[in-house]
Length: 385
Image (tube, rainbow, N blue to C red; front, top):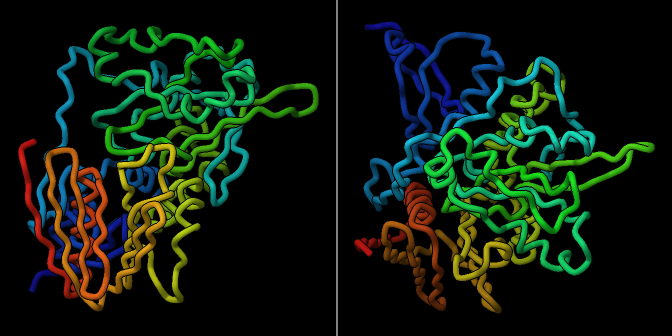
């Protein structure tokens, strides 16, 4: 019998016993779909952990893996002669921003206002979706310093914060390696707050609650504060600004791993606050996912949608707030195109529920529900629309 070793999935900590000769090869976790390289090395250093945390999730482009419940095709990016690139210069040897704290809302960083004139700082956001960390089909957004808006524009701050500039691949197609310099200043903001600082959101996600901005005074000097909800993204942002190896970086590593293992904590705090108004967890109930209803504006994400736990489905839309016990069983009907899906839920003795979702979110919902092995029938119809 060949020698075996025990390994753990870096994402969900699922244990596997594998032949020792598989060490060094690639594997995919059957529980969560995470791809990783089998390693027997110990201890694991922070470089390895950071790599695991920021590696793009292979399950983000398809639905239910081998279960075959639903297959979707991610939109293909437009051709570009020049690919988007990370910051033009390597990270500085010393941090140019200060790590302030990490809490249930996210990680916070501060720097003097004058550094907004530093193009390398403003180009330091990782080119990943601020929500799901995807590198594909990114839309370019700009940080808005709401506290510096004139009163007539301040009432529209939420709209401004969620407004995209352009697709990242379109910018690089038109301007090549000079795409960052082509970003225009924000007219309604005074200097240097009008300097464009881009972050990125994929076509399937929302920017609501993901990035926050404030200004504050430390003595006579004014500082900018940036809050980042996704701690994996925060870790990479801090790394791009010279934070690697600092105590704050190590703290973010630990917090980021904990957040990645907790589906509830991975949601932006603003979204969690809205969901908490209509979803109350039961004792010993595990939250498995939230699926937004895309008939509503992205700025309202969390006010409606579907929560899946290991015991219930909780549905909210307008005045309707329905609960479906999973052990009772029922039917799920999903009609999906490449981008959009409708989800219908029926259960004996309950009124039907329906919502509109992205195809990838619908596929994730179907996969998670199927894996729970409750008596639910999942029916899927795909179209080419």
